[in-house]
Image 1 (tube, rainbow, N blue to C red):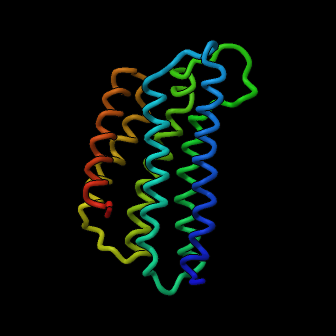
Image 2 (cartoon, rainbow, N blue to C red):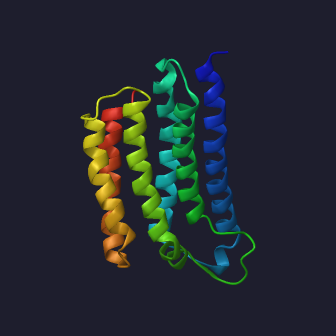
Length: 185
């Protein structure tokens, strides 16, 4: 087993925990659907974060050529994965809640920290790509990441539902652009 394969198991476990938590929270929402106030915004961000986790896991394959792996390199990739999972957990309703659950209220209660973590994650991704994977700073991927940080920080301080819908749309466009440049089928 190569060192990359060994490290990818740990990264996969962390990401799997996040995806599992989101899946369980969707199941809880379905179970509590009669006590739930649905939110398109919340649904968008939960789907978005799961897609980010899958893309993170898929993109980790690009690190297979990194040699030699060091503890700081591993920790930096692990911090990215943990940041992503923490952001996902902010969107997941807890199962022990009693009474009606308003997903818009849940989203706005956690949106500031969710978007701050999102901005931090985007910055981490760019830094790790540069310092661990050896990619140049000026990449097409980073051309989508830089505005992504700005959009996330703007969204962190907005309490307007309309602005949040616009941010969701813009985030979807930025992610689609990023994926078009970064993903290899």
